[in-house]
Amino acid sequence: MALNDITRFADVPVELEVELDRWVLSVREILELEAGSVIGMTRSAGENIDLYVGGTLVGYGEIMLIESNIGVRITDFNIED
Image (cartoon, rainbow, N blue to C red; front, side, top):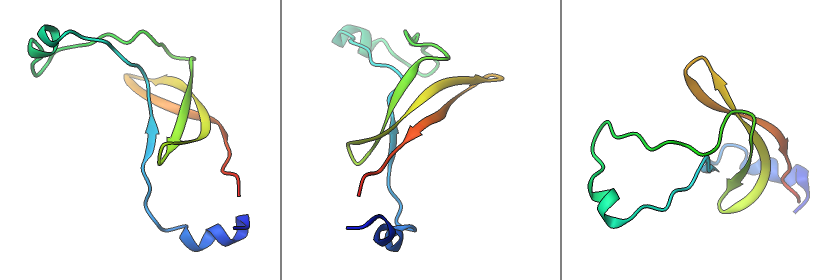
């Protein structure tokens, strides 16, 4: 499919996945979690991350801290035709 043909699907919603961190917890640690529990991140602002759509890598980003919010700045986004 040529890239200009993909515009036919421009309004179809898809899920963009951004994985900021991953943890390994014991069952005991998971059972101890409750509302308000905090799990610290091992990654920080400025680190690179991968962006996925439908399980396919489509780009890269950078973790950003804007005031007290965590965001992602897209540094490269490429969907091949």
